[in-house]
Length: 206
DNA sequence: CCGCCGATCTTT
DNA sequence: AAGATCGGCGGG
Image 1 (cartoon, rainbow, N blue to C red):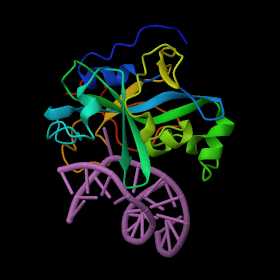
Image 2 (cartoon, helix red, strand yellow):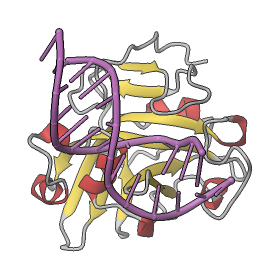
Image 3 (cartoon, rainbow, N blue to C red):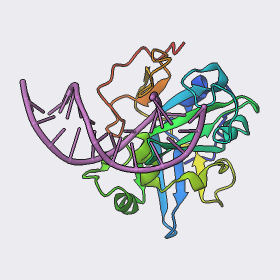
Image 4 (cartoon, protein in one colour):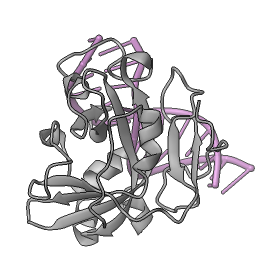
């Protein structure tokens, strides 16, 4: 858990793989610290990306994405789940990285309480809706600054360099721009969603 | 393991 | 009317 600065200023397609292995910390309502190691992400390129919520410009919902890098964009999915994105820079672009899966590192008992259907650890955070439930993040956390000192409720911390290879493939669950290989995950990690999806040579996500 | 489908509600 | 999902069910 080094305090290495995390650079979120660039193209989300380039930033996304660098977030693999980073740790997301949340202090929940019972003062328990929950920690998730990011093992799967997707890049969304704002107004340049038909699959991005920000494709048609800023709205009340997507306003955070046009703001400072390092803040949290949380949205309601299918009326019942929360999903969390890390906003990237530069200011004025609506780039963001969706956190699709975490590996539970700390606060597992609390995660199980908020994920009553989970039977084993890999059920806790293997999907974007599960991530928010396991870590206890909701719409109320939208806009939170993840790069502030670890004094807030939620923060992001560089982890160790992942031992697993980074691979990429098409993004999941969208109906437009479906072929861009902007989903990145740690190959073989059991906490990834849809581990059987095809992957692509990680060297050339464009 | 895989595919289908319903839940539930915000956003456009 | 569709959606950056999840989990239960049935079949192979």
